[in-house]
Image 1: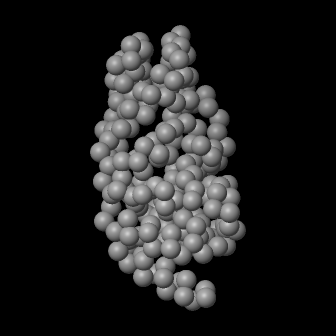
Image 2: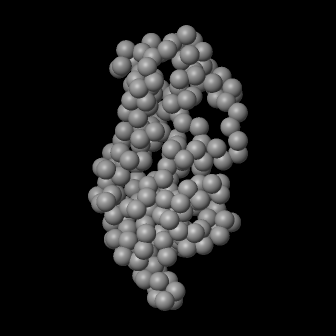
Image 3: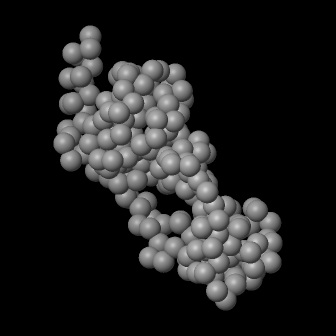
Length: 213
């Protein structure tokens, strides 16, 4: 048995920016990037011009880069990356029961993280700031790196590859019935926190492992 965990609102709680476009604009200005006066309109136009397939993840940095370029602003890509990451840099709260749940999961087999996140580097930063020992993970897969979001099959195949197991061997734990619950459609087992809390997850996993044995 292998276990994959969703990150946001499953293992950790992290507030989102109240106004994402403005938060990014502020960070761009901090880095001396001239932000267009019609920033919101530039962003909408950039989004409309990107033709992504169903389930495909497009990094927020791509939208930002195209929005700026449409107004003849061309900062280094690294500056955009830093600004976007900083805009989403918020306090991290490790959810109660998360550390024990990951520890018990790791005692049963491979364990990883499968997170929908369109900000490059954010998943890694959040995990580093959490109380969870990242050395306990055998694989960390974010949609922005993989290119596909849950519930697309390629997302779940990505974590299966990272853990070196088949989809049918995976128990995926998360909070979202559509995204995380989509594990069932591809042959994995979905465990939603509405049904099994983090506090109860160790007992659930141990019992499941005993049944398998």
